[in-house]
Amino acid sequence: MQSINKLMNILIFVVLFIIFVTFAMQNNQQMAPVTFFMWQSPNMPIWTIIFISMIIGTAIGFVLTVSVLLNANREKKKLLKDIKTTKAELNRMRNVSIDEEIEEDTLAVKQPAKPKKSKTEAQ
Image 1 (cartoon, helix red, strand yellow):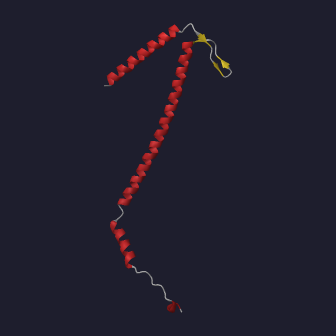
Image 2: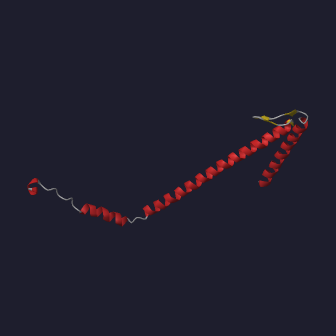
Image 3: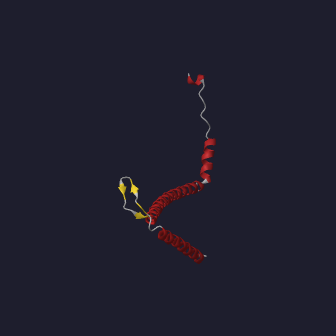
């Protein structure tokens, strides 16, 4: 399966390379300057301008993708830590002795409430 994927990648690369070379050869004579704010480049072939634009766009896309992946990885680590603490808390709650809870409940029931003093006893 991996060899088929590698073969497909090579085939796609070769086709794109042939298209790029053909485009460059056909547009080698047409020249244009690039103006960016106050800066202006000398006249360059159009294929060079397109190629440079494509490289810059790919680099920007790569940087944005890496930043999104790093943020997702940071969030994943935080959530895994939360899961770990929640599981530890759940295990602590499961291990609380049932007998201790029963004793606490029976002691609360056995101790009678203190009677209120009547008005005659207060005098």
